[in-house]
Amino acid sequence: MKMVGSWFFLLISLQGYEALSTPNVNCLIINLDYVNCIWSEQRIPEVNFTFFSNRFIKGNMEECTTYLQEKSYAVGCRLSYNKSDRFSTLTTKLVHQSNSYVQNHNLKSMVKLYPPVNLSVEMNKDPELNLYWNNSRNTLCIESEVRYRINNNKWQTSTPSKEQKYAVAFPLKSSRYEFQVRARVNSICGESKFWSEWSQPIQWDSMKGNNITDISGSSMSVWKPVLSLVGTMTLFILSCMLVYRERERLRFILIPIVPNPGKNLDDNVEAWLPISKEMCFQPNFTELACPVREYSLVPQTGSVSESESNLSILTDQSDCLSFCSSSASTFPVTSENEQAGIE
Amino acid sequence: MKLLVCCLLAITCCVLANVDKVEKSMKLTEVIKELRELNKSVEHNGMMLNTPTLDIEECCFLSALECFQTMVPQLKARQKKIQQKVVRNLKSKLLRSVVSCNREEGKNKACQGCDSYPLKDSREFVKQLESLLQKVTGYYE
Image (cartoon, rainbow over all chains, first blue to last red; front, side):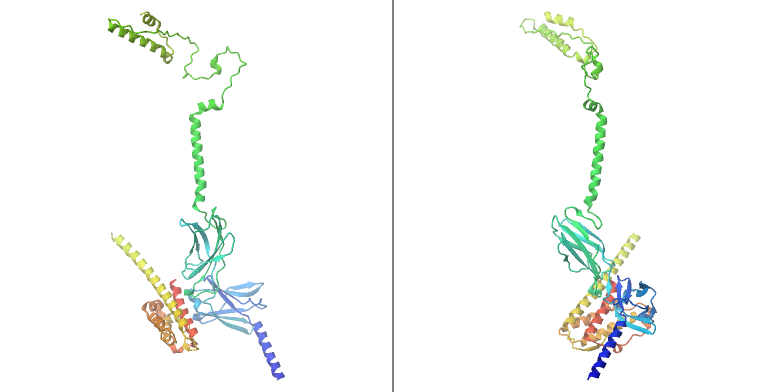
């Protein structure tokens, strides 16, 4: 009984030892572009293995052309990938001296995509906050998952969908939203076990519009500086025009000449009082007295002659008033006035 | 006038081609969903069936599909209606046209007979059939 037990124990320990020394190859399809087969996940190998692989259709085992190195040891191999390779069995063989280890791999679900890119957020009129992105591969086989949080609270995750768009209805005012997206192959095309890494986050602030980290701001923020610049330039041009036209008047307002009482008052007034010729000022002015007389109507028999004389009086008075308009000439008023006055 | 007619014809053809592609893709999606429904209603009690693998030549996929189609009725399903629907879909011309091979070389090569495929349990059988349909869907997505 003891002998059997000890043999049994020896057998198990030998098997355990063998398991430790057998390298385990793990293959993963990266972004449906290439395959990485790595045999260093348990521990870094102490020897350099030669790697062979075979996809069923080809038949022969082919040696690896692109080894992945770490600390001068080969730790993996990069293989090319074709569209239907996912559904064929991949056979790998690791060889070192006389030892070889063969493994079969089913790669259907062993896919890891790159994270989605080009995230952008825009606000709708509904109101609805729309998030858009591009998946790393242009195929309908990919489903995406969105997560977002408001003001750095707990993350909320959406259900995965084929669309490259996500909408948040009635977004909260005066809040900051942060979005991230990740993708994987959907179940109709053979669901992948692994999601991609989360994309670069994008933030949206209801106060400011779009924010930092990623891409395009809202269209309003682009137009604001343009409009303000145009407005400023227009105002500047208008003010220049105004200044140019009214420069004379502005000169009087802005730079008035202050009279100096210290000077001799007998000086010519024209020198310090700048009045234009338009104004009616004459240095050699003699005022003529306009005689003012009252007349009363006296009813008499010869009515026609009186009406004529009344008319002539009126014209004499108007001559006095119109004196300023023709300043250069002097009126021969006196003789007519005297005649009218006597009568 | 002639140029206009030609252009309209070209546009119509392109649209129809795309519609055709979408129709095929939708058909495949429908078949996969029905198969999953069937899987839920099957009694997997260790029953063994000849299961075609996918490690075969591209042009032998049609014969593999035919093998699957003959084996599906042998499953012990509680819901017979779904089972019949799946068989009908696997026989459909649309699916056949999707799977069939266009390469001339492949048509001449002989494909394995249904009996030569290894025996696997019914769960593995359904899984392999689903993989075949998913592989074909990938061509059209």
